[in-house]
Length: 142
Image (cartoon, rainbow, N blue to C red):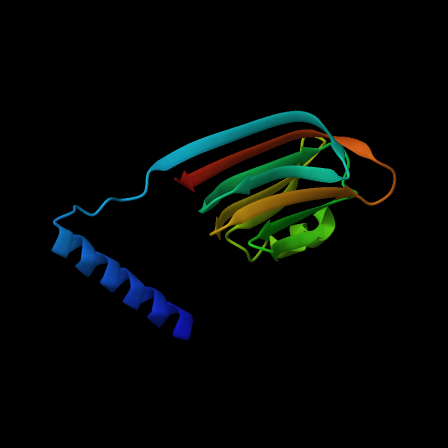
C-alpha cells in the first residue's frame, strides 16, 4: 500500500509542477501491436516486449497436448502450466482458457498488465516440436 501512496504523491506533485509551468497534461500515447507466428519451434521464448502495457490476448495453438505455457510480467510468472493444468483452471478462470477444438489444443490468456516487460515461453513435455500458431495482441503505452 505504501508504494501506491508514494506513486499518488508523485503524480500529484508532477501535476502541480505542470500547472505552475502552464503545461498541459499529456496522456501517454497508445499503440496496438499484433503478432502472428506460425510453426513456432519450442521450447523457446515466443514473445518478448519491453515497456508498459497489457497483453490483451494470447492464443497458442498446438497439434499436441504435451506442452506448457508461461507468461511472465515484470519478472513474475502470472500464468504457468501445462496444457492439461491450464484446462483444469480454465473452468473457473475468466482470463485463462485451454480447450481442444478440431484436433488442435488451444491455450488463451487475456488481460495481463505489465510495467516494464512481458515474456511468453512455451515448452514441450518431451522432444521439441512446432506449435501451429501463436497470436498475441498487445496494447502498449509509449
